[in-house]
Image (cartoon, rainbow over all chains, first blue to last red; front, top):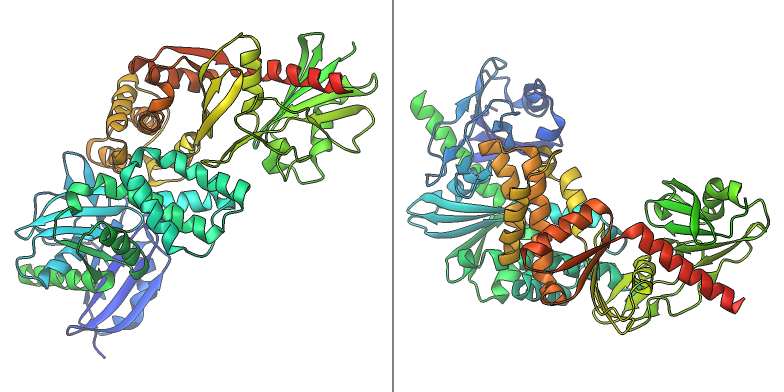
Length: 297
Length: 297
């Protein structure tokens, strides 16, 4: 079966590839060979490991988004500056590839003031907007580095990045809280914690140690502590992003679990939230980028 | 030369011991065998490694403070509950020690609402207050877990712990910011960053990623980024502790570098700050605790 083209999402810690026939996914493969685990000369080999079965029929287009376009990536795809269409420029062709592929990398977006950058999310935003004529509003893309993105007239107007996900992982895994946070969840604890730092965001660092103290003095359940930690961090983020979500049309694009967590927190504040599947948005955005490469070929 | 007694500060990551003759330090030794690196049966051996030269003359009193009194420590020294004298109870005797020592561990303090704990700082507070009749005010003890302590009429009335130091270490060493933060310092960047999160503490998680973006887009100096990171975290802490320091008599007990950093930030807000040497406070507090063990012997 002939593969028409190959969609690739290549981040810091993951590599995912999809074989596309027409508009349908015919196969899927992934590995942990993200940017952080691939040396400067290892990109093509890491990709071929996953896709070699799909490219026997001759040169197949590969369209990739994510950190793979960074300066230390496969090819540098320089940022476009906002305000901007999420995919303003034709993807950058990777030079000197294996003859069985023609590989392209999608540029990220940068904001000059305040300084901010994204790589990968622009593709999801393009895919999300592609299915919605005249959608204006704010898109939240939760993850290791959560993005809040203001969209108007098809353009990314401005955005802000929050290290909430990375802080959660570091605090759970590396800090003194690792002794007090474990598996499980408690919705009430999450909701209370969101309300707490949303109204008093400056108390975050004290509330964090409070999780440890509550464990030592009261033997608090480790799943409850996990929900509370998540709520404290997301509450502080919602305090900072209030101008983004208050009274705005709002969409969340992300993995199901974290999207639902953000949606719960936002709905409690009276926000109306639409959630969109991250993989679908990525594939739709990569398809748009692929069409751009064909129009200029 | 006869050692009268041995002072010990035993935290999570360090073990420090001082040989005392009369009221003077006659020798000093330290190792990295903190709580985190000593198994349940390893405490006495880790200590004897350092002090064996000092105890040939027969049973010598050892007075220890810090995490060594935790449940997983050498002997559990249960917390006293605030409001309380910083050293309300006689230190706990360690059972079945080597006959050359009689070892005692100082209890920590706990607060029930909001839950909080300290181990080691109570000894520094006692030492600090011992030299100051009728001192009322607020003591800040910066470190991995910075404590803010309200003192009145010789008692610890309340306290709050902030994970500021641990967050700084994790962000510098483990997060995406490790690529953008390095050696060096910039006073102006520190001062600006303190002012920034002191007035807008909710922006902390966004400002953090801004350090990475400023490096990528503007090639910001890594020492400047380090000062800015420190300022952002301390500014957010000062926003939370405003009721502690605004218009209060204020003392900082800590290592010289971090104490000066906090003092700079507080003086910029118009606070009058006294700084006290942490080691001197620890030794003075351990001496007070030693007197308690002798009065009950």
